[in-house]
Amino acid sequence: MPDLIHELLLCSAEKTPHQEALAYQGAHLDYRDLATRITDCASGLLHLGLGRSERVAIYLEKRLETVVAIFGATAAGGVFVPVNPLLKPDQVTYILRDCNVRVLVTSTERLKLLAPVLPQCHDLHTVIVVGTPDKPGVIPGLTTVSWEDALSGNNNASLHRVIDSDMAAILYTSGSTGMPKGVVLSHRNMVAGAKSVAQYLENCADDRILSALPLSFDAGFSQLTTAFHVGASVTLINYLLPRDVLDAVVQERITGLTAVPPLWIQLAQLKWPATVTEHLRYIANTGGHMPKATLDQLRAALPKTLPYLMYGLTESFRSTYLPPSEIDRRPDSIGKAIPNAEVLVVREDGAPCAPGEAGELVHRGALVSLGYWNDPEKTAERFKPVPGKPLGIAMPEMAVWSGDTVRIDDEGFLYFISRRDEMIKTSGYRVSPTEVEEAIYATNLVCEAAALGIPHPVLGQVIVVIATTRDETPLNTELLLTQCRQRLPAFMVPAQVIERLESLPRNPNGKIDRKRLAQELQGLFMKAQSD
Image (cartoon, rainbow, N blue to C red):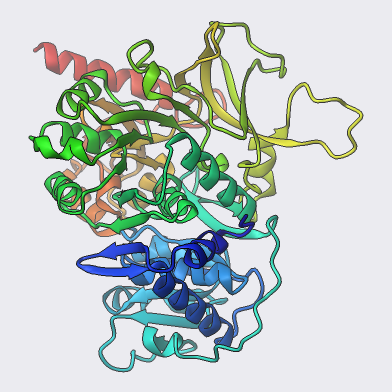
């Protein structure tokens, strides 16, 4: 059985070399071809000087080269860092600097945007450029090489020694305060996750899985690992409209589709061809609660398709799922722990909660990540010893204390209540209010600003900003939003900016009182609706 993440694919290549592994825009790679490209990529990275456990960032849309670079990095003994392709240059630069990226894989178009800021990334020494018709341009202090040249290096390079407890990836997720945090995942985490998810979804080599979610998102990346574990096929898609997703499901005869609630809400409004249910074996929801009305619509359109409701957090990759057999009995439940994991509900002192009592969700097991990159303080806050374990064990087992409040019923099924932090969940993304506010402050158009999440029937939440101006001049909200669009990806741009004449309220600690602002804002929205 494979111990390392790239071995998931290499083992399938040995068993079923001619089985289709990956498809993208009409191009198809079988497992043997994909394994060859990954091996070539690993050799190329070593030839370029990649050291053991050094970071390789991939800033690309989903395409064949993206997958090859990810698994090539781990095959070489490095660590891959998938960067959301929607992020802007300043945000990409932050990630590259934060985890000391040594090699960047990106496209010609994206490199042009990054060129002015890459000199700030002092640890970066090489940029591999995908899609360059000629030699890539020169960036002072950096070696630039085309994708083709990078893969044509010395195939006899000696790979770095790696074991399953070593780092495999760093996935960046927004925190409730400050800039994004890098969650460090080991080979063991990701291989265990692939085995667990494939087990309860009953994935097999006949499956054709559609990769609709970003590969920088743990649930999106899981589409690759679960497929490669069982020798299934993955179709990559960069969609603009929900119709594009449905068309791909039909054309590629997809058997499994995982998405976030905002996408499911849009997909539920479309007319699904009756033939889809003949091949679409399951659908799965992650990244938030799927509205019951949406679930009902999808089940009516897909009577033979099994729905799975899932819950997870990047710090433990996956946590719980509700099997299809329980949907009618408890559609609002997040289910029970996935295979090879245990989920506890505890009070503040770590004691177990009684059925029906609200407590914090704590996840233990092989999927618990290695913590946050270069941030021992935040790691100590979220990763703590498993409650209730014998005190005589010299090395305590660490668990993820999620910060999410849940309850458990008499039969052991879990129900999500709330998230303790101030994260804004919009369009399936977790957005840090502070990151939005920093972009707003950079415009020099405001004095104070607070970004808040307001419930929305389709997006989950929308971002609304309350701001004050530096002087008595009215706030130019249109100009502010225009500059936000230049600095932030679309899903982080505020839907509305509200000017406040007096200073923002403070709590006893001197911080902006977000709870009070949220209550005031909710009152304004309710009043507007009643009027």
